[in-house]
Length: 279
Image (tube, rainbow, N blue to C red; front, top):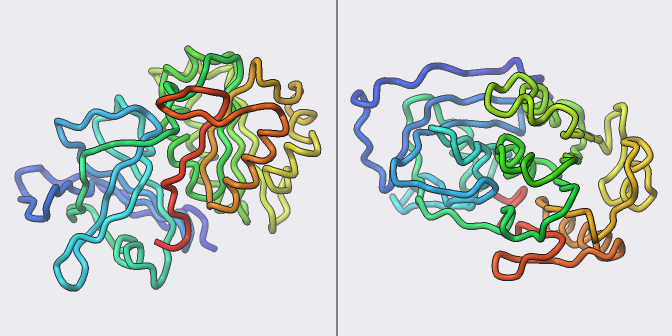
């Protein structure tokens, strides 16, 4: 793994310098490679795009036949941001990411401006604490929600649990959380409310273990000094692989939480569109 030193940030070119020709084209404004498996990038935002923090859109490139190759990507930037940020895995022979990982500033990507998703505040009943539970690039929608003032207006405590195999894979989330205290919009709101709990499953780190194990054993509650989950006060959002989602749902149900949706808000929600390592 390489640390976050492999960075290719650069200012966006003048908008007039590039004329989009892809369908629903947006221009790449920055790219950052966090490890040899993970990268983030920012693109221009369509003027007509309105979304709720936590939602996803379809983005992609053209395949060898000139046909759009699209996948669902959570928007990692908050709803107020003037640009759109995405966080992605690199799959060497993945249909999309094998191409997407090579984008550079000034390139075009396809972005279908129809945001949807279940990881939104409207899909949960009011509560005191909100748990963001993610593995790998599943942190993307929470990167959006952690930067949204509404999150801190609705909850007294915000707990971000993020698990990866190695420490370098946590760096995107770590730097984001660290930057929030100095954010001019929400810095004061975040202080004392946001609890960050990163863990690794392979490399040694201050906190080890899977999210399900740390919840079931009660270790995370003891480490953070908070009570076990209570359906009267706790709400949760889940984003990861299908297997992770299934396992976490079982744990949350044992705590008495029930799965909600946009049409029926309850105690927790799961993002079913997360595509994981196959992209």
